Length: 134
Image (tube, rainbow, N blue to C red; front, side, top):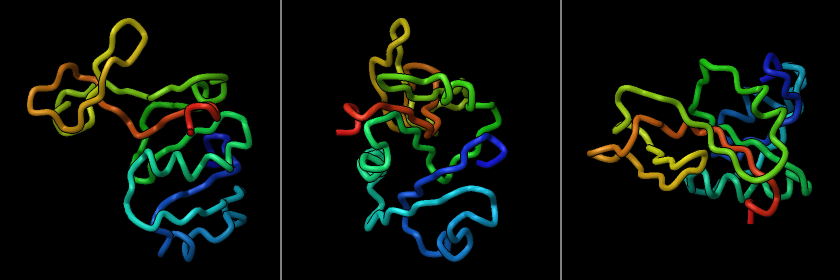
């Protein structure tokens, strides 16, 4: 995260070993804030936990079980308003949440479909402004 230019983070997950391993983040040059997710509630619950952290600004949530080969920093840094869900073309879309798009907008997202409507996987990186967190 630090190498990508992010210095403040919230990790809404079952904390367990994360707290023990990462602590405050000072050893890594970042500031970490933990919110406890009592049960695995998915991205929607994680975004809800990030609402206060956003402080009326934009927030980006990256699921902890995701690794990005592509650089997302520029897209996150230039994000100003609305909601942005990061997608990636994959050859085996049925293994992921799959987005169907029309123009530049997502029409639907289906979780692990048997017959995907596209090859665009939802990556687990989402940016949005405060009104979309409610």
